Amino acid sequence: MIIKNLELELTNRCNLKCPLCAHNSVKFEKSENIDLSIFEKIDLTTIKNADMCGVLSEPTLYPHMFQLIDMLDPNTYIKISTNGTTNNTEWWSNIAKKLLLHRGSDVIFAIDGLEDTHSIYRIGANFKKLINNIKAFNLAGGKSTSQFIIFKHNQHQVEDVKRLSDDIGCKNMIIQTSSSYNETFERPDINEPIKTWHELCESSDKMEIQCKHLLKGYIFIDFKGDIFPCCFLSLGKYSKVYMDSYNLYQNHKADINLYEKTLDEILQSDYYTYLYENYKNIDACKSFCKFHHPNFIKEV
Image: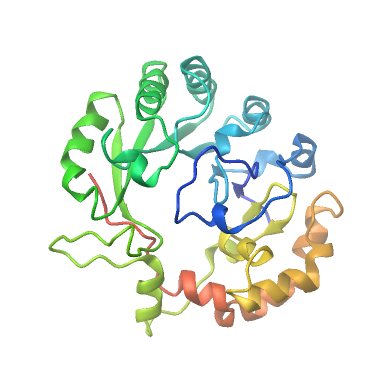
């Protein structure tokens, strides 16, 4: 299989304490970053898309970000999802210029409200620093999208954040649900019913899972160099919530590390063979991918 799409968990570090993030449920012994040498084991000329997604972390804390972008093929489309409160305006200006050398790019900045509400969920965030970093990135030629996770406490600011996003140069704004809601971070009270991705999957008994990650050349690489088809299966390393994923990782973890194996060996391993044959019945796959749409409401 030719790998065309990379999803990258470059580090296990994050500067914020967002309460519903999976980062808070994992106890890391130390800060770790993926070594650049691991990318020498991948044919980067075939990569069409590189997504620095930060499932458990903040990707812009990766100390080798500029070198990694240099290693990627100029035809690779790069997407970075960030809380935007790391580094300084010079760093953000420079990363924008670096990304301009590629076929395309998009940096998705989390703006979950205005100054009075943003840090209710993005605990530890400096709102003014976020806005200044976005301005610096956009003024240097970067293409950005703002992402608004909607809760009851910020639902009244959707239009205000849209105007702010436009004013500081963001090309698009995405409004999406949280991965979950609770008594503290409540579901928004708006006319249209809001369901999380999990709820959509649980309520769907008609849609058959078609795993594009297994079938269309995707791999997820975490900060330790472990290879998975997607970020959801990677969470089986840390949680017994999805026992199929957890047991699968425990039984095959020696076979999926790119420091220890070649990429071909991993893709032909018993781990991947099992997934090809059984992914439609694996608990994490059914929970996350039975419904074909992500926790996404609309783009405005």
